[in-house]
Length: 385
Image 1 (tube, one colour):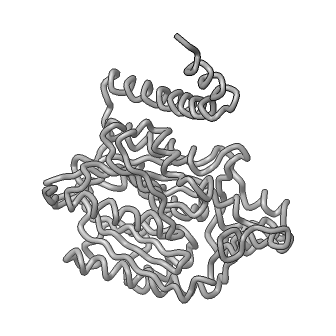
Image 2: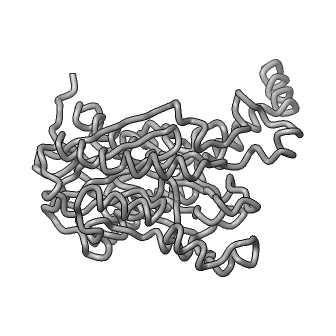
Image 3: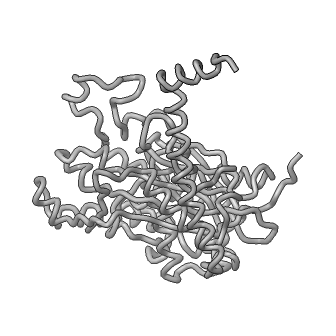
């Protein structure tokens, strides 16, 4: 039996957002809205949109590579990849499998997880459980979404909110005092209709009618989602602090899902905390769904706001309805390392081998499935010696 471990420590982190920046003024040229209307209601000023050729997997791979670089870790040592997304590249296979191939993490299991905007914290919780149980030594957790693929740009109530991006953390088993202290997961499926993409699943398969009705785009009851978020976010932060044996005042940083600045303001009031304790970057990226919490965490660390020994609470809420929070003690080992040249060279070579290997395997399967080739091989086998 595997030996249980006490902690799952964050040792690497990374993020990726597309180069294209779309401002509120840009949106005002596309639809009936204005910079003032968007900023006063959401706090968003800009967001990043992926180009047509880019999908969720490529962003997730880039964020994952950065996390491995920060930790100076070998992709071959990853035991599990958990990818939180509601915009997978395909219905099947999982986008996590594409990421596993792109990273050359050939020893890793890979699976997608869809809990909406709570997805990253859900995945972090499962990663913590896998490490704490002794089943895994190293787990890569990624939140990535290409929300602009499922947003109706004719609907300003949703089109102005979302951006694209990916964030990742690498967790490693640790016997020290730093790492994930406690987690909370929750859901209320009775609110499933408040935030959903109606068509494209088994309940309403794609058809000419569903396309004409624009039912493959995200729909949201903004008022009800706002009420849900302002109620559940402070509650889940309080509960995870209690489960970790902490007081609210012990929390140094709250890294929340970046959905709406007014939700965060309301949460700060209910918790009687200074809003400055909430790390926010919604003005730059908008709502990137499952990517928003890891992107915010990555930025907070890069900018030097997070230091060893501090207590962080990562909290999300979203479609489902779902909510989740994790209390984390940031450790002294969680810092960017300048890896030796040979280590960086090894990862560079592994990524390129992974790409070539993937193409080679696909080509081999196609050749083996080729009827003319199969017929030729059959004749060669039957040829008398």
